Image 1: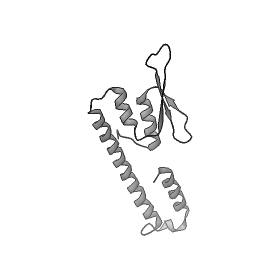
Image 2: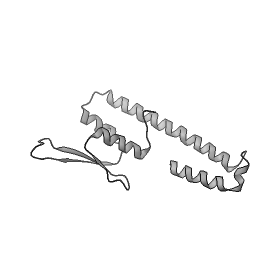
Image 3: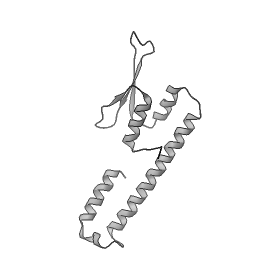
Image 4: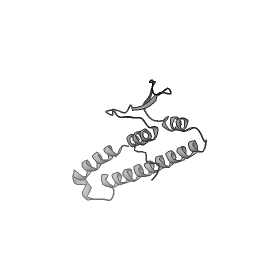
Length: 123
């Protein structure tokens, strides 16, 4: 459940008269859901940290490592060759809804797409 949905539920329940009795009320159910959501987010963060460490342990080249790290996220990788850059410039374009950001460095882009997914592997 997304954090925005939880915030909306909290606001709705707190405005409701039944929230005055904490035992067995919807407020108690909400507290349980919030606690479960936090536990789920911690597990997601731990899994992403473990995934990152296992990919780094493969000792891949930098570009290959970031390709592996970016696999679960929505993005487009555009390579544009120019006369000055014979290898070409790589641009990472975010494909999440209402986001038009692009990055030239994969490490910065990885941090950005993790923000969309609310993943914090370093917590």
